[in-house]
Every structure is written in structure tokens, then in C-alpha cells.
Image (cartoon, rainbow, N blue to C red):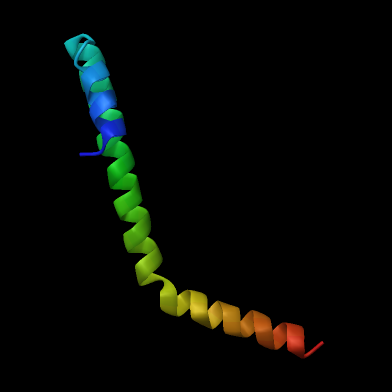
Length: 62
């Protein structure tokens, strides 16, 4: 665990259970969003390559 994360966890420990749960939910949601974005981006590489090629061809044809 990094020192910064350890500091954050120590501060969160001083909060009420409800506040701790709210922060935990935000952290977990952020991690899940990052995972979904990474998965979506990884699976769209072929599509992005095709679109980039089409855009390049269109620019070069002008």
C-alpha cells in the first residue's frame, strides 16, 4: 500500500460507519468504471483502427 493510500485509510477510519461505507462505495465504483473502460477500449481497438484508416484515406483524397 502506498503512503498516500495509507494516510487516506487512516483518515477514513476516523469517520462514522455510514461515511466509511459511502467512501468505500465511491472507491469501488471508480475501480469498476476504470475496469469497464479498459475492457471497452481494449475490445474496440480493431474498430478504432478501421476508423482511423478511413479518416486518413479521406484526408489524403482531398
